[in-house]
Image (cartoon, rainbow over all chains, first blue to last red; front, top):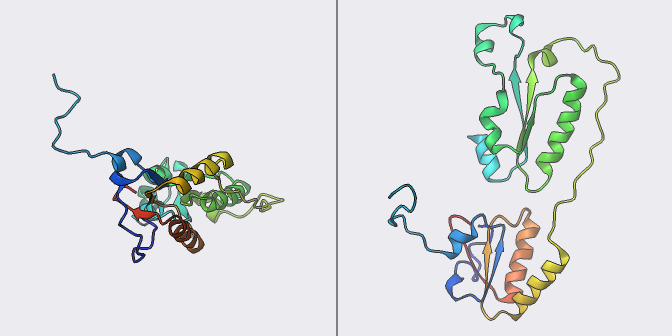
Length: 47
Length: 161
């Protein structure tokens, strides 16, 4: 969020190919490193 | 909405809310309908701290504390409720004083953990930096870029970063 958007290193990082990820004040690391689909069946409240 | 925006952008702000708690004062209709038992409750979810001082000395102490809390990273808005009596009645308290402001050192990571992280980053073949709300000052962004360039670490971001 706070990395300069015109810098050549901006926006080209691929987390899937990274061997080390440095997260700096990231609010939700799980959502960053996992793919969650809203189409997934609801896991709670159903029999 | 402006207070919420300040909270999201981590902008330090001191918000002063006017209020009237004394029902027997029989204030005008407009003032009474704009008063509340807990005036700050509506913004409490997105402010760092709030207080409702009961005296002028209390107000002075709370204001200094409000400034300190708002300015301590991560910065954000704080709120003070100023009761009508404090604002309008003659000053009867004696020896009023403004407390000395002491600043708080911002928190920082454990030096051992930082050294270990640095070691992992230097040894990484494909490090990636996810820059959230790290940099609080222009110099912080400069240092972040310097770190990325030194490591040749690519950066990414997302809606939740």
